[in-house]
Amino acid sequence: MGYRSIKRVLGETNLERKCRLLFGFCLLVLIATAFFWVNRVAENLVIEATRNKASDHVVMLLMRSHFISFETDPNPEARVWTEQLSAEFEGRQVFTYEILKLESQSLITQLEHAKVPATKDMQEWQILRDLEQQHQKQLLENEKDLTEEEPPQTEGLQILPNSRLFEQRRSPDRSEYHYYEPIYWSRNCTDCHSTLQETGAIAASEGVATGGATRPFHVIKVIVPYTETQGAINKARAIMITLAIVTVFVANVLLYVVVRYVIVKPLKHLRDVSDGISSGQLHSRAEIQTNDEFQELAESFNRMLRHMTDAQGELKQVNYELDSKVDELAQLNMRLYEMNRLKDDFMANMSHELRTPLNSIIGFSEVLQGIESLDDKQRRYAQNIRSSGRVLLEMINDILDLAKLEAGKMELKPSEFQIGVVVRAQCDMVRLLTEEKNIDLDVQTVENQEPMFQDQAKIQQILTNLLSNAIKFTPEGGRIVVSAERKPGDLLKLIVTDTGVGIASEERATIFDKFRQSESVLGTDGLTREFSGTGLGLSIVKELCKLLGGSVYFESEVGQGSAFWVTVPWTCSSTPPSATRRNFQLRGLASPPQHPLPAAATPRQPTSQDGTAESVT
Image 1 (spheres, rainbow, N blue to C red):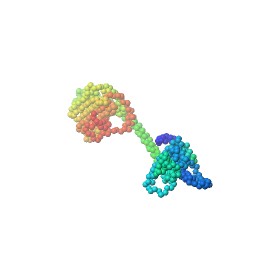
Image 2: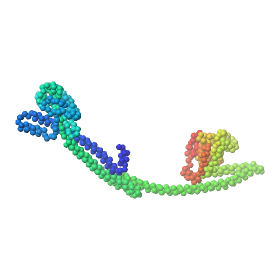
Image 3: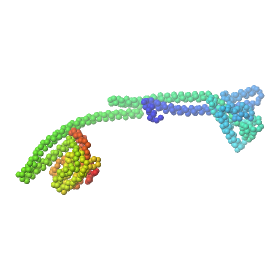
């Protein structure tokens, strides 16, 4: 039976029952095995003793028979005395005997009472045949030994040899023990027991001729009652079984006492202490004084309780401090939320208040330019007023667009359009600026493409900002290449490449930050700028790409130029939900800006909007 089966049988009992059952079972098996072998040995000893008695009885029977035959005194009193002496010589045995032979007729005198075994008793016949074969073999060996050695000086009466043959069995009804032993003949025996002179006839019928003498084969069978012997065996067996049961019972009682007071009692005490601690009695401690492993376990248990109590106190203090920090953070978030709301309100009011006078200034400057009485200097002043107003209006529009994007208030308005037509139109709008700086503007698009379903205004704004940066930072005589194509995965890839000043490796991590420009465009004093701008163009491109579900990448090398490309879905599946101002603020607090751009990048290594390197497709 496997361990799982034992566990399934004993799984619902407690430790004491398990120990008693397992130990009792093992002890019962051991005792039963030991007593079984003891019983077998005892039974064999009883049978051996019975066999020895029967063997000794054979000797006494032969001696008694010859003693009676040798008595020739005609006095009846002497013969009575001889019979009494032979009876005393035989002893008070309850054994009986028979003389058996294999042939129905015997030529041996004074053995007329020898008989043939019963026909039905085949086992007895087989025993006699086996003894006959062994007896003949033994006689041949003895004759061979006698021929090699010197003949004995005298021939006496040889009743039994040194090595005796025998067979034994129990009767079919197991009430008797039968002992079989051949009768050994000497020369004197054959002279007395045979009245025939024709030894050849005797040899042919009953015996084996050896040296002119005939030695017939007879077996003496001793019958010993087996009832008393079996009773003694049964009594001994019953005593052993009783002793086994008593031993197992006493061992289980002792085991119960040992397990109860040595193992279970300390465990119950530990369980009670554990239950008390679970119910809130934190000052409970295990008290076991047994000077063994249970005492060590109790000491370890107490150390664990002390450590747990100390840790619980520290945890309460940490939780209290954490609650305080959470309260402070919540208050700070509310303040940030309020400040962001004030900022949005300020931006909205400022944009409204600034746009109105700026539009008036731009309008009046255009009116002034149309007055014919102005001289060239005045016209130049009016043109400066108009240009500066437009630059300021563009800066205000960029700030408002970025604020809307960050606040999640910018919505998508998808529509179908030809991307090639939009790209060429935007390039035509800035072509005048490229011609002023003698910049070659090359447009590469695919004709007759499937219409794109996206927010056309956002695509135009992305392209305009990229073109504006490219024109701004490309020197005279440079080149700008604009391409738009559809890539696998239903994506639009928009690329703007220039031969401008490039971006230094140490500035790539902040290229998409708000209000940031490359240090190469600043003057030596850090205050004057070679190129005008707010530093919001790429930030707006990044936010618009996120809004459209795309991303922006770049690669650059100082003095060689830069390449920016944008990937957005070809088809806008749905309008993304507008994020609330509070969610944006919390997201910004939880995730600080990440721009893990490398400090130095090899040429033609593209970088995404979040600063990660991308492979060029």
